[in-house]
Amino acid sequence: MPTVALLSAAHIHAPNFIKRMNERPDVRVKYVWDDDAQRGQKAAEQLGASTAELYDILADSEVEAVIICSETSKHENLVLPAVNAKKHLFVEKPLGFASGDAYLMAKAINNAGLIFQTGFFSRGFPYHRFLKEQVEQGHFGKITRIRHSNCHQGSLAGWFDKEWRWMADPAIAGVGAFGDLGAHSLDILLWLMGDVEAVTASMNVVTGRYNDCDESGEGLLKFKNGAIGSLAAGWVDIVHPFRLQISGTEGHALVLGDNLYFQSQHVEGSDIKEVWTDLPEALPHAFELFFDALAGKEVPLISASEAAYENAVMEALYKAAASSSWVAPANVETSN
Image (tube, rainbow, N blue to C red; front, side, top):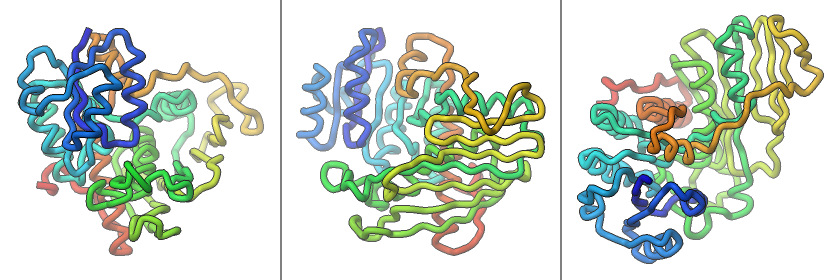
């Protein structure tokens, strides 16, 4: 049974993660650390754990792994000491504040040979898994364009008004709505299509509820394989029916809600007019996969390098929006 520690419960997903850990009989949470003592004590009580200083947690040989759910601006100061202490890591997305700290952390994690996971859970959806297989098998022919969208009503419903207010402050979170929800869409786009050459974007403040924090945006991506991608994300949508579209010379796919419509010259019986139901099983949540990996199971994880590259592309999208230009993502060399 792995023994783990929670390093901060600042993130909006922390309550869900606490619930998930409590529901796993094969996980022991020994400690909670938080620079907000009240928040840390609450999380510790929920987990049946003790609060402790960061140094003492990392020095405890019983602790095999840490779950980092702090404000994004504090990730580096938690990740690097954890790496030095040889602790496996789940770091809630995004890994870094920008490309520089993300690449630095990824290099340290990779060099230490540690198990790493981040919170990109969309790869486990059945339709995403199916479409990944179809792309790899060439069943779309040459993909010319791909679009992904991830939106909710967070601003409209005031989700970030109180304890999660930092997530609507780009000086702490690194991003606003576009980067928060768009990170999931960007992960899928990069997973399906590979590296990008350059990006551009436009982002808007809509309600003004969170000062100058962006609440909605659209991005364009030129992939190195020649395809054009687009990405929509925001906190001001009352519903979100559209998720994904892939258009190729020999196939097409559309995801509305949880329904996939698919047609390919290479797949018998596929008809874009009908819901395609022959899908793989959903994978467990990305957080659950981390604990499965700690238990020695062979499971698909998001690598630290992938997480850092996502940071770099998102950083480029924000720079492009600010400059009304096309921007190439920083690589490991240019970010240093």
